[in-house]
Image 1 (cartoon, rainbow, N blue to C red):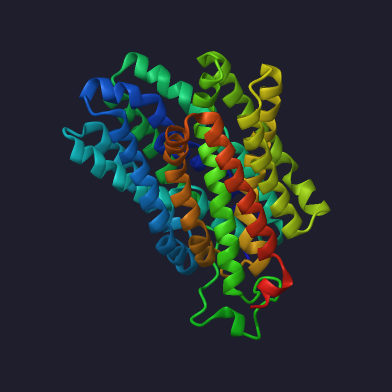
Image 2: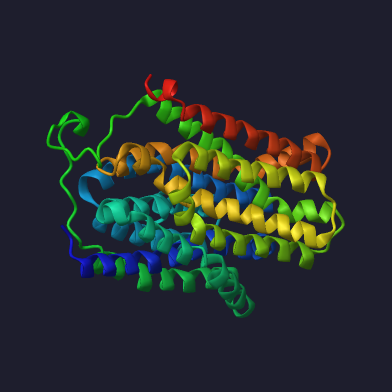
Length: 399
């Protein structure tokens, strides 16, 4: 059993590396996208598609990464992923042509699967066991500041350097702050993987191992995936919606920022929510919060302060959903196979998060505006509530 000091050090390492990895690999791109288009002539939809392709690769690779984590633990996987991430960012920064730029993002997607939330969540879930919620909350609270730290940092660098120079500096930051810390910090012992299905082992701790009822597993995964579509399509398209409502960029940006505050508040309150609600009720309630606030955005043109309040509640639902997703597998099926099962569980959600922004914009074009698109997304969210509720029924769990 890892010592408390080793676990504390490992948790601190993951808090640091998650904020840096998210900041460089995810949040730097929207800040630099306009400069990339201006400098290269590549269209914004084209470079955004390259970024989305990285998220798709991350989702698909996450299934294999989960199996590797289950057998070998996070140290070498995340260290190698950090090295791969540095190489990818350098390739993106120096790409002389669009195909090389796309190749850099595909490589970055593979790195994302090794260094972002999924492997970090798997590590602390296995290491901390019954105390995992506090560790998961710490990681998500710190990583939630990635945009707060790296968006202005990237913008400041871009003011004095080209987009290429900015990415090269960020690659150095990534190399210095993640590669050695993953290698030296993620050293707590990792339990050996079982050579056979662990639910058949009489020696297994029943608190850590529970039989997987696959219809329930996949129905729940579907519910989370549908909710991810609602959440990500809403947050990415909130600014265009408010522009449609007649608000300027500053007002729209403040609404988006208030949502970030709501995320932090949601994550802080998740532990209290778990003590007062059961799994199915908690899941359905959080999904309902996302669906209802999306519907309110569709219906309410103002006043502005009301929209800010809705944005705060919507952000709260997103923050709660992050920890809900991180604990969905372990709360239902134990921690012993978390890395492997979580890779399967989260792959469709990652795909949804990659495609949702485009789905929201596409719906706005097809349906005649963002308010109607948000109404459609609210209905999508309601479907997620229904699927989550049915996945928790006794009949489904026993199939």
